[in-house]
Image (spheres, rainbow, N blue to C red):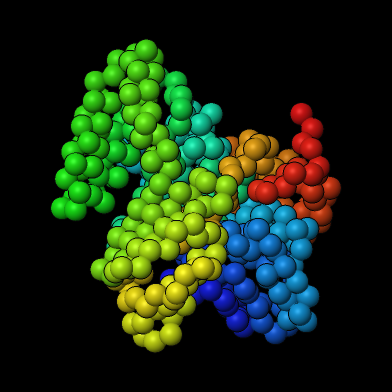
Length: 377
């Protein structure tokens, strides 16, 4: 599937057989499930941020749009996916492979693997990198299940979305900050030596920090650059983009030759393929820009930021899983039916009944972008 496709028109078989690969097509904003498709759609569609923001963009064969109620049931169906086998790289370079029930939230995985930084989930990204070509997917640690993102031959890690005003001292944060500076430095190599040198210096100095006072001093020292940590820059062969993605308006500046477009809204960014190796990059307030696949791949992360949730989920720890009506034994820590767990005491045909039982609880807790109703403690 074209990585920059924005709409899907599916057959019934297609809609039944989607895989977590769909999550890499995060620009999809319109899905037609195809003829004769009337049951609950696959959980995989819940991996698409634009569908989560507006479930009505997912349509059944009779033209009926999906609702938030259907989205909730799709999320719960992730409990019936195979266990997720996650290869995770820690900030210190250690790599492990862990198995999690597919319904385990990405926030829960963060608390299991890196409990010392889990309270900072709102300023972190979970990053999935495909080993084959380095393609990255940025997601927020949230109540959404890992099963909808679990692709083979990928490695996961956690990185800062931006540098906050305060961090509690620990070795994990030191390593993550150093890696953050090194990653930003790559943008300026061979382009702006002063910025490259500055970021290289920061990446070394943070490793020399030994206590909370040192860390406070370091963050204060770079304070004049603090807002810059919320700006991402991407450079292609024809143009460059800066985006302050944390800004309430997600402000974007685009430079192409002598033209400069400023104050653009990141959420309006879209890309459409018009020929085999010709794509059109559009954004409200800017002339369309033609580019090839190589440039589009460089901008992959930019488009990821265009659709990612503006604010982190307030209560990711409140995620709900399917509760089963019968006692059973399983090697996994969270109840669910999977291929690897081989739990046989609950028949798949009972899934809809179980989901309906849980829906009364699920509908009363906020997901991304919700302000009502208030979550009860």
